[in-house]
Image (cartoon, rainbow, N blue to C red):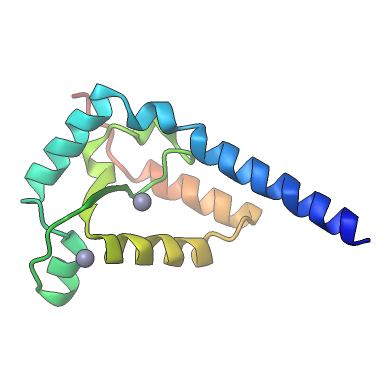
Length: 123
Ligand SMILES: [Zn+2]
Ligand SMILES: [Zn+2]
């Protein structure tokens, strides 16, 4: 029994890490680095959540995809889909998304709807 459980969890771990690595190549692309820089400059290198929600100036460490790359890859390089955040806010966003989008069918559809709201602009 214990063997079956550890076997299952082993499988889950593997597929999770594979999913993460799947987009590693993307984050190494010069096109992404360029977009990331443009987004940071647009946001004045400040965490947009700290600024909007708390009126605090915090240097941004991360450029976050509002609609995740794995949800809609066509938005991966869209500036409207990028937001500069600090580490703390970035972790929070992912925690909240995790709660909102537990892997149900409804959640997947909701994600797709949100992705449609983002304007696609040619760079
Ligand atoms: Zn922040
Ligand atoms: Zn993120």
